Image (tube, rainbow, N blue to C red; front, side, top):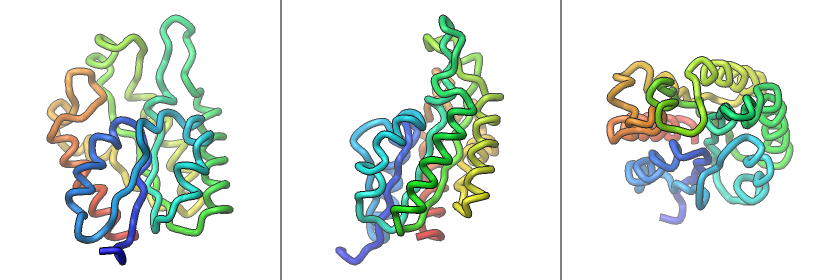
Amino acid sequence: MADRPSAILIGDSICMGYRPLVKQRLADKVEILGIAGNGGDSGNILSNIDQWMVNRNANLIHFNCGLHDLKFERDTKKYQQPIDVYEENLKEIVSILKARWKGKLAWATTTPVIDARHNAVKPFDRYQAKVEAYNKVAISIMKEAGIPIDDLHSVIMKDDLEACLVDDGVHMTGRGNMLLAEAVSNFILSNH
């Protein structure tokens, strides 16, 4: 079906978890595209914006970054991308996309973390309070730019958080991935 609309889903490992399920769900309706690996933080997306986003044919770009940005290194006591840098990077990404890409845009909020689970098994910390703070910054930027928001954070928070996240406190279980895939699929169908 060459006449199907297409959507590029760009994000981190959370996106990598739900993207194949979205592709399955929308197989007859929308061609789902992605990138080869993990999108990483906002700086990485900014560095790869032409290759991943601008110079591709699609009707919609559905994108997210945040979980890598808010990683807190215990030894240096620094965030991978401090919130002010995250804010500037997102503004730059939005500015480039609005200036050089003519399709529709959509932002996905960063999904929750369970601090205790995550910080017990990872060599760096993540905190739910920071997820909320980074989401607040991103939502403000996207609203100002008129970019629709797919609130994946709320999808997981409204369900059973403990059942949606695996033992590392950040990645999704089968249940979490199915919930996100359903939400993203519905969002794409109503916004492509």
